Length: 482
Image 1 (tube, one colour):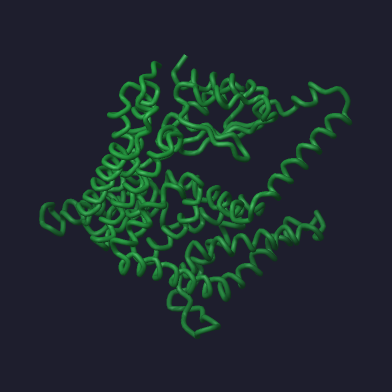
Image 2 (tube, rainbow, N blue to C red):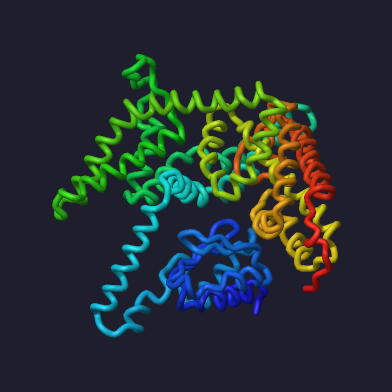
């Protein structure tokens, strides 16, 4: 049995068995389990499973096992349960365990009511964050792959310009890499539109269609559409991702409203036609102009704050980003990063925020040295540190710094120090989102990677020094065997 299959087996054992799991899914670092009866879950023992870096209770039970590993663990668990990722496990289990159709229906109704009550009790802001996460997290692997390809292309182009590479030979390779990169980013609005429609209960292809309208691809050469507010021409992509999110959300409301009274016999013809026509007009003449103003204002305000605030802004942003990650609030920044890249070619925000992970890496190294007699803690650090250096912070957050308390604070301050350095340099931006830490170096725009590296080293050093001298709990330094 593989190591990942063993982790999956132990997870099943501590969540009440596979019959207590209704669905298995995963994101970049977490196996997400639908749980039938939460009382059967032994959280304390689950957290002690070798390979489990942390557990988060939400609408699903989220077991953190780290990037790379998570795909294999989820696949092994799905194989053991005899289903595919995302499929319902033992869909007829309740009917088999309960006698009588009435009891089954009663249980189903009670479960549905309980879930609805839980959703209604969530704050609107938390639901918004969850929706943004569901829309953008599936796109992150594409951001990472295409972004790194763009970084390689940028390095080659810089060397061609500097005369280090022959233009006649290497320019075509840069062009090819650009084509591959654009396969994601040129049509990003459509991917976002599809995911947004799926998230809010609309038809995915209609969501992609509404998003595609913002590209104005059907406009004849030399023709323009006039902005009814200013008289200027509406530009392709105006309003950006923010406009797409709002337009497709509004489309979902319209579509669901129409389906309530349009007869089933003509629904397949009438509903999509009305949705595309009405939302197309609203998107072009209302949402694109208004969202364009909002997007431009938001990006300008963030860039101005970073440029004017410099060292102070960098410190504040770098310090408070780890708590945002811990609470899941960082997802709300994803469309902002995307919009900054679309408008200016780079996001100045991401390199500063990436320093938070650097502070945590430095704090973890300090804990490794000072708590070397605590074998379980050292093993946790050894497992989380490599991916932490590459910018995946959750294993160290949930497995190391948050449980110990003080190291989380010193890690945040270390991130603030790195952020201050980036802010002091100024004009350090990333051409794509997805990775951070060392993995972000190839994505730094304009050849300013050295400033980013200096900031990252400052974050490492700040987190290390603060944790070594002020953030290490005494009880964590005591000898503990495995």
